[in-house]
Length: 505
Image (cartoon, rainbow, N blue to C red):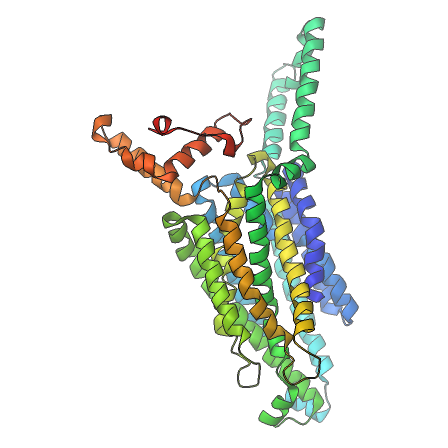
């Protein structure tokens, strides 16, 4: 529930917030999110009840849009062929934070927990725990307050609609300063007949534009596109698999019997046992976050940019899903015990590889099915898949494993491990769905087209150019289709543009 409540609220809030960002700007959304996180971190420093923690997680879900908003900024400013790379850079920085946070928290934990104080009665484990959370909460709040200041003073605005409004306002201000009329008042100079005609046309155009920009119109346009739907479902499945892998690493640790701790480490005091398990859990989180975090940095900075230029986003996602499938099979056949409690670390590096390897690829593919001015609505709707996968999969798979795996109390009852086994076929299903989706254009196809254009420019005469490679390669025709669709012919859908072999030549 603690993991799910965050994503359930995010499921509702993210499309609305990203739609609003198209009109109020990306910068305002950043300020809003960081302010919420700052206040929740301060609350966390004083929280002592489970219900308080659950409420903190729920309200934080309203602000869980930092990365999606970053993806919007990438869509606003990055050329098409560099979007996946830019997304990889974002994930690398996020992974660096995911690496640093658990490291700091572990050293904070080990610095405060004192077994001798617990045994002597000077402190209880509860006292030490509250001290840890107080320092952690205020440390987070300080860093997040710095983020608020950065969002206010340093982050530039990139939303196309907001920038256009600012330019219009600046132009009107200059015209007014020069003694002229504002651009919006020019129509007053037109004769009455023409004015009525133009007002009628403007009203019809305005209504048409509003209908096209309406969130529900964008939603309808996307869900009626079967290719977008296939990619969306595959994205939901991939995020769901990732969420189970990432969120259940502590669940794995909780399956280690406390009796084994008492036996292996000769612990007799209950308070010391609680403190020792908490300390070891923080170390487990450190390993399962820092290891995959480092791998994500490598993926985001080195491997993903190389792969998308050579084989494209779709095949890169297939490789990632295959790696996750293998990692899930491995995790599903290992039983948690005191000796194997750190076992998930290595396979977690594979099963959580989605963030660095495939997440940016999914975002790029989903961003292709919309207009530039609708990026917020488009990726906000795509965020449904992220939220559904993160919220629904752990709950549904946990209940399913609970039903199938036997009766609680049995020696072989281990629902967490069964969840990993159930994950494996879902990876394969996501690969099939993605294979059946038609993608407008991929990075490696753009690279191919640019190479062909360079070859054309270097060639003086068309007779010296081997056109067979152009007409046989899918990339050139798809690139031409996409460029044609983006060059003013906005009434044409990508799938409706078809070029013959002769036209491609």
